[in-house]
Length: 265
Image (tube, rainbow, N blue to C red):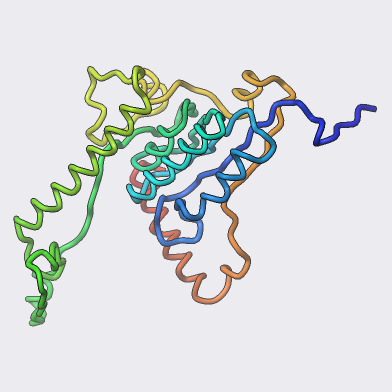
Protein backbone atom coordinates (compact mmCIF):
# COMPACT_ATOMS: atom_id res chain seq x y z
CA UNK A 1 0.00 0.00 0.00
CA UNK A 2 1.30 3.41 -0.94
CA UNK A 3 1.17 5.88 1.94
CA UNK A 4 1.15 9.59 1.11
CA UNK A 5 2.45 11.90 3.82
CA UNK A 6 1.41 15.54 3.26
CA UNK A 7 4.79 16.97 4.33
CA UNK A 8 6.64 14.64 1.94
CA UNK A 9 4.20 14.92 -0.95
CA UNK A 10 6.04 16.23 -4.00
CA UNK A 11 3.17 16.03 -6.49
CA UNK A 12 2.32 19.44 -7.97
CA UNK A 13 -0.29 21.48 -6.13
CA UNK A 14 -2.65 23.99 -7.77
CA UNK A 15 -4.55 26.42 -5.56
CA UNK A 16 -8.04 27.09 -6.93
CA UNK A 17 -9.70 30.38 -5.97
CA UNK A 18 -13.35 30.77 -6.85
CA UNK A 19 -14.50 34.30 -7.74
CA UNK A 20 -18.18 34.31 -8.61
CA UNK A 21 -20.56 37.25 -8.51
CA UNK A 22 -20.59 41.00 -8.89
CA UNK A 23 -17.64 43.11 -7.80
CA UNK A 24 -17.96 45.62 -4.96
CA UNK A 25 -21.74 45.42 -4.60
CA UNK A 26 -23.55 45.43 -1.23
CA UNK A 27 -24.10 41.70 -0.68
CA UNK A 28 -22.08 39.38 1.55
CA UNK A 29 -21.06 37.29 -1.47
CA UNK A 30 -19.83 40.31 -3.42
CA UNK A 31 -16.21 40.25 -4.56
CA UNK A 32 -14.18 42.91 -2.75
CA UNK A 33 -10.47 43.33 -2.13
CA UNK A 34 -10.99 43.26 1.63
CA UNK A 35 -12.93 39.97 1.53
CA UNK A 36 -10.57 38.27 -0.93
CA UNK A 37 -7.28 39.43 0.63
CA UNK A 38 -6.89 36.60 3.21
CA UNK A 39 -8.10 34.01 0.70
CA UNK A 40 -5.57 35.06 -1.92
CA UNK A 41 -2.77 35.20 0.66
CA UNK A 42 -3.43 31.57 1.62
CA UNK A 43 -3.83 30.44 -1.99
CA UNK A 44 -0.44 31.80 -3.03
CA UNK A 45 1.52 30.78 0.07
CA UNK A 46 0.05 27.62 1.59
CA UNK A 47 1.72 24.43 0.40
CA UNK A 48 3.99 26.09 -2.20
CA UNK A 49 1.59 25.78 -5.14
CA UNK A 50 2.84 25.35 -8.70
CA UNK A 51 0.10 27.71 -9.89
CA UNK A 52 -3.00 29.56 -8.74
CA UNK A 53 -6.08 28.90 -10.85
CA UNK A 54 -8.99 31.34 -10.68
CA UNK A 55 -12.50 30.05 -11.39
CA UNK A 56 -14.06 33.27 -12.64
CA UNK A 57 -17.71 34.09 -13.23
CA UNK A 58 -18.45 37.82 -12.99
CA UNK A 59 -20.38 40.43 -15.01
CA UNK A 60 -18.38 43.22 -13.39
CA UNK A 61 -19.09 45.96 -10.89
CA UNK A 62 -16.89 48.50 -9.13
CA UNK A 63 -13.86 49.61 -11.19
CA UNK A 64 -11.95 50.46 -7.99
CA UNK A 65 -12.50 47.04 -6.41
CA UNK A 66 -11.65 45.39 -9.73
CA UNK A 67 -8.38 47.32 -9.82
CA UNK A 68 -7.53 46.58 -6.17
CA UNK A 69 -8.19 42.85 -6.53
CA UNK A 70 -6.29 42.68 -9.82
CA UNK A 71 -3.32 44.53 -8.31
CA UNK A 72 -3.28 42.17 -5.31
CA UNK A 73 -3.26 39.13 -7.61
CA UNK A 74 -0.31 40.54 -9.56
CA UNK A 75 1.60 41.50 -6.42
CA UNK A 76 1.21 38.07 -4.82
CA UNK A 77 2.07 36.32 -8.09
CA UNK A 78 5.30 38.26 -8.47
CA UNK A 79 6.31 38.07 -4.79
CA UNK A 80 5.80 34.30 -4.64
CA UNK A 81 6.82 33.56 -8.24
CA UNK A 82 3.58 31.64 -8.81
CA UNK A 83 1.79 31.90 -12.20
CA UNK A 84 -1.93 32.73 -12.31
CA UNK A 85 -4.31 31.07 -14.75
CA UNK A 86 -7.93 32.21 -15.08
CA UNK A 87 -10.74 29.89 -16.18
CA UNK A 88 -13.91 31.71 -17.20
CA UNK A 89 -17.29 30.10 -16.64
CA UNK A 90 -20.43 31.96 -17.86
CA UNK A 91 -18.96 35.44 -18.13
CA UNK A 92 -15.90 37.62 -17.58
CA UNK A 93 -17.18 41.02 -18.63
CA UNK A 94 -16.38 44.60 -17.63
CA UNK A 95 -14.78 44.34 -14.16
CA UNK A 96 -14.89 40.56 -14.53
CA UNK A 97 -12.57 40.84 -17.52
CA UNK A 98 -10.38 43.27 -15.53
CA UNK A 99 -9.85 40.42 -13.03
CA UNK A 100 -9.26 37.88 -15.81
CA UNK A 101 -6.61 40.14 -17.36
CA UNK A 102 -4.71 40.09 -14.06
CA UNK A 103 -3.92 36.42 -14.79
CA UNK A 104 -0.99 35.28 -16.92
CA UNK A 105 -3.33 33.17 -19.05
CA UNK A 106 -7.09 33.17 -19.64
CA UNK A 107 -9.04 30.09 -20.72
CA UNK A 108 -12.79 29.76 -21.21
CA UNK A 109 -15.64 27.51 -22.27
CA UNK A 110 -16.88 27.72 -25.87
CA UNK A 111 -19.99 29.59 -24.74
CA UNK A 112 -18.35 31.92 -22.19
CA UNK A 113 -19.04 35.65 -22.68
CA UNK A 114 -15.89 37.79 -22.75
CA UNK A 115 -15.19 41.51 -22.94
CA UNK A 116 -17.34 44.59 -22.29
CA UNK A 117 -14.22 46.74 -21.94
CA UNK A 118 -16.07 49.94 -21.20
CA UNK A 119 -17.55 51.97 -18.34
CA UNK A 120 -21.21 52.68 -17.62
CA UNK A 121 -23.14 54.97 -15.29
CA UNK A 122 -26.93 54.59 -15.10
CA UNK A 123 -29.49 56.69 -13.26
CA UNK A 124 -33.01 58.07 -13.71
CA UNK A 125 -34.82 61.39 -13.83
CA UNK A 126 -37.95 62.04 -11.77
CA UNK A 127 -38.29 65.81 -11.98
CA UNK A 128 -41.23 65.69 -14.42
CA UNK A 129 -43.12 63.27 -12.19
CA UNK A 130 -42.52 65.47 -9.13
CA UNK A 131 -43.69 68.57 -10.99
CA UNK A 132 -46.92 66.82 -12.03
CA UNK A 133 -47.54 65.87 -8.42
CA UNK A 134 -47.00 69.43 -7.28
CA UNK A 135 -43.81 68.56 -5.35
CA UNK A 136 -41.08 71.19 -5.25
CA UNK A 137 -37.48 70.00 -4.85
CA UNK A 138 -35.35 72.17 -2.54
CA UNK A 139 -31.59 71.62 -2.41
CA UNK A 140 -28.99 73.86 -0.75
CA UNK A 141 -25.27 73.27 -1.29
CA UNK A 142 -21.90 74.86 -0.67
CA UNK A 143 -20.08 74.20 -3.94
CA UNK A 144 -21.85 74.31 -7.29
CA UNK A 145 -21.03 70.70 -8.16
CA UNK A 146 -22.21 69.20 -4.88
CA UNK A 147 -25.64 68.22 -6.25
CA UNK A 148 -24.30 66.99 -9.57
CA UNK A 149 -26.79 64.81 -11.49
CA UNK A 150 -29.49 65.03 -8.81
CA UNK A 151 -32.20 62.72 -10.28
CA UNK A 152 -34.97 64.94 -8.89
CA UNK A 153 -33.85 68.02 -10.82
CA UNK A 154 -33.61 68.67 -14.58
CA UNK A 155 -30.41 67.35 -16.16
CA UNK A 156 -27.62 69.94 -16.33
CA UNK A 157 -25.36 69.70 -19.43
CA UNK A 158 -22.35 70.78 -17.33
CA UNK A 159 -22.97 67.88 -14.93
CA UNK A 160 -23.19 65.44 -17.84
CA UNK A 161 -19.87 66.75 -19.22
CA UNK A 162 -18.19 66.29 -15.82
CA UNK A 163 -19.52 62.73 -15.55
CA UNK A 164 -18.36 61.93 -19.08
CA UNK A 165 -14.86 63.10 -18.16
CA UNK A 166 -14.84 60.77 -15.13
CA UNK A 167 -16.07 57.83 -17.22
CA UNK A 168 -13.48 58.51 -19.93
CA UNK A 169 -10.69 58.58 -17.33
CA UNK A 170 -11.80 55.27 -15.80
CA UNK A 171 -12.12 53.79 -19.30
CA UNK A 172 -8.56 54.90 -20.01
CA UNK A 173 -7.35 53.09 -16.88
CA UNK A 174 -9.21 49.94 -17.98
CA UNK A 175 -7.72 50.06 -21.48
CA UNK A 176 -4.22 50.61 -20.11
CA UNK A 177 -4.59 47.60 -17.79
CA UNK A 178 -5.75 45.32 -20.62
CA UNK A 179 -3.04 46.48 -23.03
CA UNK A 180 -0.35 45.99 -20.38
CA UNK A 181 -1.50 42.55 -19.30
CA UNK A 182 -2.23 41.30 -22.85
CA UNK A 183 0.74 42.96 -24.50
CA UNK A 184 1.70 41.29 -27.76
CA UNK A 185 -1.49 39.18 -27.78
CA UNK A 186 -4.24 41.64 -28.74
CA UNK A 187 -5.40 42.23 -32.30
CA UNK A 188 -5.09 46.01 -32.12
CA UNK A 189 -6.32 46.36 -35.71
CA UNK A 190 -9.77 45.80 -34.20
CA UNK A 191 -11.47 48.27 -31.87
CA UNK A 192 -11.67 46.15 -28.73
CA UNK A 193 -12.49 48.88 -26.24
CA UNK A 194 -16.04 50.03 -27.05
CA UNK A 195 -17.87 47.74 -24.63
CA UNK A 196 -18.49 44.89 -27.10
CA UNK A 197 -18.76 41.28 -25.95
CA UNK A 198 -17.73 38.08 -27.71
CA UNK A 199 -18.00 34.33 -27.19
CA UNK A 200 -14.75 32.63 -26.26
CA UNK A 201 -13.78 31.44 -29.77
CA UNK A 202 -13.93 34.94 -31.20
CA UNK A 203 -12.31 36.38 -28.08
CA UNK A 204 -9.37 34.01 -28.63
CA UNK A 205 -9.00 35.21 -32.24
CA UNK A 206 -8.85 38.80 -30.94
CA UNK A 207 -6.21 37.90 -28.34
CA UNK A 208 -8.43 38.59 -25.33
CA UNK A 209 -7.96 35.01 -24.08
CA UNK A 210 -5.62 32.11 -24.83
CA UNK A 211 -8.33 29.76 -26.01
CA UNK A 212 -10.85 27.10 -25.03
CA UNK A 213 -9.95 25.07 -21.97
CA UNK A 214 -11.33 23.79 -18.66
CA UNK A 215 -9.56 23.82 -15.32
CA UNK A 216 -8.90 20.17 -14.42
CA UNK A 217 -7.85 18.83 -17.85
CA UNK A 218 -5.74 21.91 -18.55
CA UNK A 219 -3.91 21.65 -15.22
CA UNK A 220 -3.42 17.88 -15.68
CA UNK A 221 -2.03 18.54 -19.12
CA UNK A 222 0.47 20.99 -17.64
CA UNK A 223 1.36 19.44 -14.29
CA UNK A 224 0.55 15.75 -14.76
CA UNK A 225 -2.32 13.41 -13.97
CA UNK A 226 -1.46 13.40 -10.24
CA UNK A 227 -1.77 17.15 -9.78
CA UNK A 228 -3.52 18.05 -6.52
CA UNK A 229 -6.10 20.82 -6.10
CA UNK A 230 -6.73 22.88 -2.98
CA UNK A 231 -9.83 25.08 -3.12
CA UNK A 232 -10.43 28.51 -1.63
CA UNK A 233 -13.40 30.88 -1.80
CA UNK A 234 -15.69 33.25 0.05
CA UNK A 235 -17.77 31.64 2.78
CA UNK A 236 -21.05 33.00 3.98
CA UNK A 237 -21.20 33.16 7.81
CA UNK A 238 -24.16 31.31 9.33
CA UNK A 239 -25.35 34.36 11.28
CA UNK A 240 -25.85 36.24 8.00
CA UNK A 241 -28.83 33.98 7.24
CA UNK A 242 -30.96 35.61 9.90
CA UNK A 243 -32.50 39.00 10.67
CA UNK A 244 -32.19 42.06 8.48
CA UNK A 245 -29.23 40.57 6.62
CA UNK A 246 -31.65 38.20 4.86
CA UNK A 247 -33.48 41.14 3.28
CA UNK A 248 -30.21 42.85 2.35
CA UNK A 249 -28.88 39.69 0.73
CA UNK A 250 -32.16 39.22 -1.16
CA UNK A 251 -31.93 42.74 -2.56
CA UNK A 252 -28.29 42.17 -3.45
CA UNK A 253 -29.25 38.94 -5.24
CA UNK A 254 -31.74 40.89 -7.39
CA UNK A 255 -29.06 43.45 -8.26
CA UNK A 256 -26.60 40.68 -9.14
CA UNK A 257 -29.18 38.84 -11.25
CA UNK A 258 -29.77 42.07 -13.17
CA UNK A 259 -26.05 42.42 -13.88
CA UNK A 260 -25.81 38.86 -15.24
CA UNK A 261 -28.99 39.42 -17.29
CA UNK A 262 -27.25 42.21 -19.22
CA UNK A 263 -25.24 39.46 -20.94
CA UNK A 264 -28.19 37.14 -21.59
CA UNK A 265 -27.38 34.92 -18.62
